[in-house]
Structures are given as C-alpha cells and as structure tokens.
Image 1 (cartoon, rainbow, N blue to C red):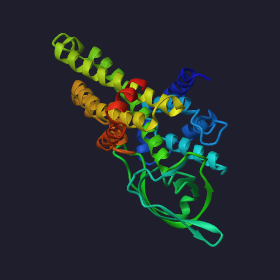
Image 2 (image 1 turned 180 degrees about the vertical axis):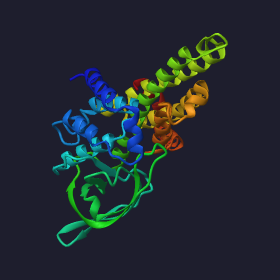
Image 3 (image 1 turned 120 degrees about the horizontal axis):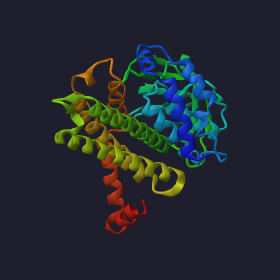
Length: 345
C-alpha cells in the first residue's frame, strides 16, 4: 500500500474520531479507549513491525504517513511509542501485547541497566518523561543490545504531564524482565533516532494544520471592512508561516526516506528534528499573533496543536542537541566528505 493511500485512510479515521472534546477529555485524564480500538483494528500500531526481516525499517513510510495525520489532529495516543515498541519486540522475537505500549528511555541521560539475576534478568535504574507509562500494558527498553519487556505494575511510576497535557511519567525500576537479543543492527542510539524522527513527522503534520487554521481565520476575520488576510502585514506573516511549514514537511519526508535506506540516517534525523523544532517555535508564534485573543482561549482548537508542538520539540532531543550532532557529523566527514553528503541527501 502506498504511503499516500495510507495517509488518506489515516487522515479520515483521525478526522472522524478525534474531535476537540476528545482531546480535552484526554488531557483531563480520560484515556480515549474507543479511539485506540479503532486505531488498533486498522493495524496502525503494527506499521513498523510488519516488515518480514527483523529490525528492518521497510515500514517506516507507512508509519510516518499515519503519524503525520495523528499529529495533524493532535491525537492523544501513544501511537509512535507503540509502533517502535512492537517493532523492537518483533525483532527480538517477543510477543507484543495488543494494548498500548511505551518505550524507555526517551532521554539520553537515563540510567537503565540490565544485570543477571540467577537464570533471568533484572532491569534497574531511572528514566524521566516516560510517555503514557501508566496507560501502557508494557514498557519496552533496549539496553546493551537487548530488548526487555517490563510490566508497569512492577515499576514505580510517578505521574506527570507534558505541556500538552499528555502523560509523561518518571520511571524508577528494579524488577525481573523478559529479555531477548535485539535484531541485528538495532541499538539504543537507533531507537532514540527513531523517536526523534517520529516526533519530527508528528510536528510536520501539526504544523500543516496550524497553517490551515491560520489561513482560514485570516480569510474569515473581518476588520476595517475587509478580511485581515488582505492586509500586507498579515500576508507577510502568513508567508513566513507557510515557508516554515513547507520546509518542515520536506525535511521530515527526506528523513523518512533516509530511514528506509535511501540516505544517511544520523544526518537526516538530526537535520529533521533540528529544523522542524525550530519551525515549531516560529509557526506557533505567528499563528497566535494572527489569531489574536481568540487563539489563546481554551475553546479554540489552536492550542491543541501549538502546545503539542512545544512539547514534542523538547522530546527526544531539543534543537541544540541535534545541531551539535550535525556539527559532529560534518567535522567527521571533513571538507571533502560534507558536500557529497549534502548533495546525496
């Protein structure tokens, strides 16, 4: 199935099943179980794990198409986390629960370790900002080239929330886990990059919707006898907004292609997360300026998107972290290697 068709199907599902009330209810603590059932029945959480070869990212285009539409509608689900978790479990030969899953760690500073306990394994350590930890049926961690499946009830989860109101729990654990070797080539660094790529794709989708809402509002809002979108100052702001949205879509799509084996993944993900994160700040600022006071109200849908943009840009590495990564890659390639890297991407 082409990623365009997948995106069309996902777009219709999320448009039909994610009204603003559902997002508000989720932020108030009500997990959208009916939405999850529909998403699960559509097979979306298995988009990455569907590849025949363990550890293959052949399904990344379909996964990205789904996540872009989920981001566009601010769908309050651990969909990206479940995709990555099921992909990890499938590669390791561990049966995945049908319910939502999450992954750990999501920050480089986490301190999770695996150690032998008799014939089994124990996972110990701490990890902050775990997405949807208390709602997950399992926490999947990759440590030292091994995949571990942890039951949330065996860990200490301190509840928290992101700026968007989505659950972000702090994990403290020392418990027995089911452990298997990860698929060849799969390690914690790759999983971290996949998390960053998923966030970049979700932000690209949210940015597209912010642009659509802002253009529509500028055409509908009449001031001094004409739509505010007719004023040159507003047109200039909308042009800047559209420029950042277009750049984000291109760089995110290029990173997805790189993940599918058509480019340098570390370089592409670093560029995507840095550029889309930068765009998130600029676009949110312009959108709220154009909307004026109505854009700051809880009743308006704009905040569902902009608060997620601000939240997602901070997860799996902020812009400065990935800009430093770009610098390291450029320095390692040297003067003769940088230009071929840029032109091939």
